[in-house]
Image 1 (spheres, rainbow, N blue to C red):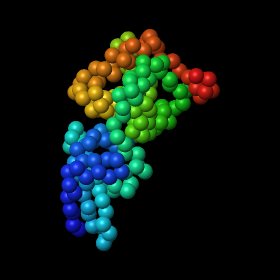
Image 2: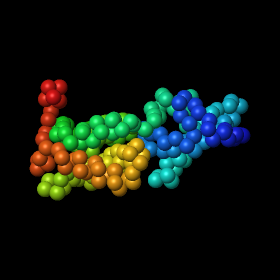
Image 3: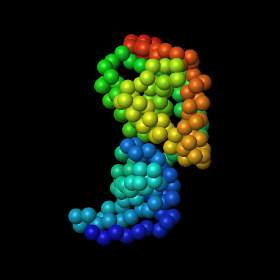
Image 4: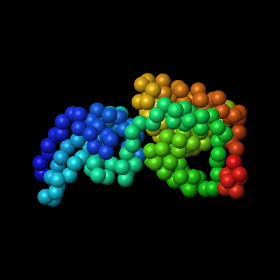
Length: 190
């Protein structure tokens, strides 16, 4: 198995080394290199992506990058739209928690900033609201972290500042005194 390092300015499928990207299952990472590896006698080009916060390195085949949902960071107007989403009214379906938890988890791992913002909005609890269960809190924090990381990268701010920005927008929303429950039939009308 041989590994060859490509030039630092190398670019593939619109992605280039040194660029921050969003990988659906892990969030914001940086392409540190584009390598060529020989696997089972075939040459394979790979993006080497570092996720600094998770202290993780991922190698993604260049040919698969688009199909797995790897994308560039959102534009600032898209970030603004996501912040508007968290200001909205929480939409909690009347389904079993296990099913909702699966849906929330799928949204978080979709890599779509708007879907992640919906999870943050729906699971947010103000000071005057009832406590969250452990699993609700875990999902909320995962979504908030994923959203804050992308906002921090786009707006060139710290993650702490990005979390504060999201929380400020959450508190601009409708009265956070009670959770509004909706069933699927009301969802279509909205």
